[in-house]
Amino acid sequence: MDRPIRVLVAKPGLDGHDRGAKVIARALRDAGMEVIYTGLRQTPEQIVNAAIQEDVDCIAMSILSGAHNTLLPRVVDLLRAEEAEDILVIGGGVIPTDDIPALKEKGIKAIFTPGTPTQVTIDYIRENVAKR
Amino acid sequence: MDIEKRLLGKDKRAAARLISLLENKDPEGLEILKKLYHKSGNAFVIGITGPPGAGKSTLTDKLAKALRKQDKSVSIIAVDPTSPFTGGAILGDRVRMNDLSMDSGVFIRSMGARGHLGGISEATSAAIKVLDIMGSDYIFIETVGVGQSEIDIVKNCDTTVMVMVPGLGDDIQAIKAGVMEIGDVFAVNKSDRDGAKRTAREIEMMLDFNKDVKWRPPVKMVVAVDNQGIDELLESIHMHRTYMIDNELFDERRANNAKNEVVELIKERIEHTILDKSQKEEKLEYYAKRVADREMDPYSAVDAVFDDVKSALQV
Image (spheres, each protein chain N blue to C red):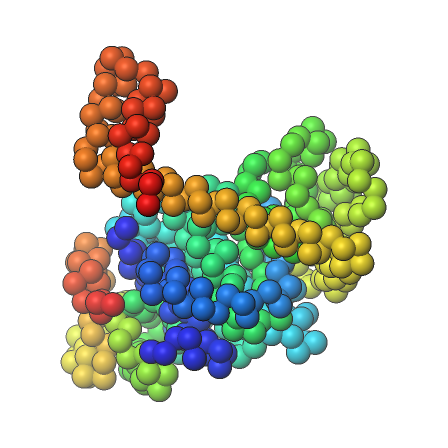
């Protein structure tokens, strides 16, 4: 039996807009993935704890508050501290193009900005989750 | 990762990985579980079931918090439905348990039902054992939202809590066979709403018909979001456990559950053996086509498949 890819969809930070996260969650579900949806206002610590207990292949974070430069790298750092850097970390939301290179350098493997077709995200996850 | 050693050291990552292996039917996972099985059996396993939206996740969150105040370690397995079309799932029970995710004495795992129809997934009983071996004092199993007949939870736990809410139907629903029979303790959640007393009364009336009068399942009014009635509900859950132990029913239930589990595993193995073999030889396709064309009836098709693969079972 094919193992479904498990993805944690999380909303770090304080903005209360989860439409995008829900659209992505639904799209990943329809692509045959198991999506663990954790809801709004998650701290990086909560996200990493959940990711480890759920043994996910990927963490997908949606952020619209502008705090991406702080919160997204923090998740990567915490994963490294837990020796869980094999988990693929990606982000999406309102993120200025200028910020993207620095985020990628810090270990957020891909950033999907508004207008990205969901299929692009699905394909990216499929191709990049670690083989177990 | 040395899963075995790390699990015995209460390492959550090892538990999480082992559950994944078991969910994916990885032989490595089964070997580890076989080795450590004798260390399980110490956790108190509580099933939380009820219709969709009854408040199972919120209630589980509050019960877990009450137990954390007593310094007990708690694990939660939350099952949500898997899409029958894509195999995908949205597992959203953690949304109601966010504060617990920072508590080092709590482990939460979401599982997709993955085609299993009894309210839990095929791997749920294996996951219970993993968390039991890890040393959890209490394990909650939250089922998918159930309708009328998903009763597999009762075969996997020591005490079943049936969560009901006002406004779902009349007393005829309450006396129908099925899920209403499996509650050891009833919780009427959202009991600040209209009709809660009536719902409780209908459950009580249903219970009045029961012949086994030794354990009368208590019906507790709770408002989970406001943390109302949680301690009383927890007390009822513990009373059920005490009753079971005092009357030597606890071991009997576990023996029954063990028998059920072995039978289920046998069924699974036979099914896989036969389907694998007949699919590999494309016999299934062949017979199915004949059944669809009315050249053969499905009963004879099964006879034929069995005859064809009998050798496969003689292992």
